[in-house]
Length: 113
Length: 111
Image 1 (cartoon, rainbow over the protein chains, first blue to last red):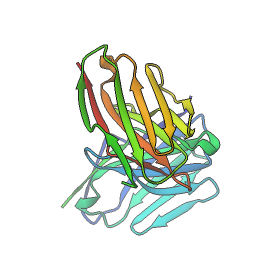
Image 2 (cartoon, helix red, strand yellow):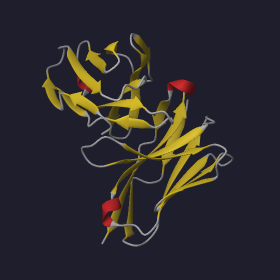
Image 3 (cartoon, rainbow over the protein chains, first blue to last red):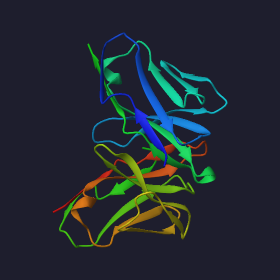
Image 4 (cartoon, rainbow over the protein chains, first blue to last red):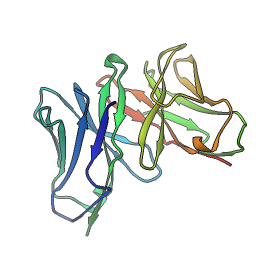
């Protein structure tokens, strides 16, 4: 079965540094990989999608890479701020047009001022 | 929250009782999903719908049923609630570019 692993349960970094979160997957070859942000008590919010033929995608301070050989995606937040503190979820699209998602358990990011 | 409303937001129910959670969207999206989120398991797909009266099972569908009689409403029913169904339930709709938009969630406690 598909399995998605995200690095560590919590990542603590200092404000201004770059946060790097990891998503590894097995037994699957997704065409798309997505990243979501989730704040306590709220639903996940879509951030970025990267396709299998894209090596890198950027949006403001966010950058996502996708290595289909390593079966890994890295999610970077540059110049991190305390407001970036949240849980970040990696998700793979499966099921073709039905757009079903399989999620990792998430990484809790805490940015210290 | 992309025009998605879940109700109720919180519910406490007794073991063995039926429970229905409602998801309402104003975006006219074809695809709707129900997920549950539990510590250590992340979000898992329960059921999904690809149109009115068209539904299918996800990875954790046992003990749950769904119905979609209108494009805007997707109902999740726990036929006979058990303590293992204590969870946070999220409804989502599928965007045009494969992204999902989630509701605020329903926290269900089965005692």
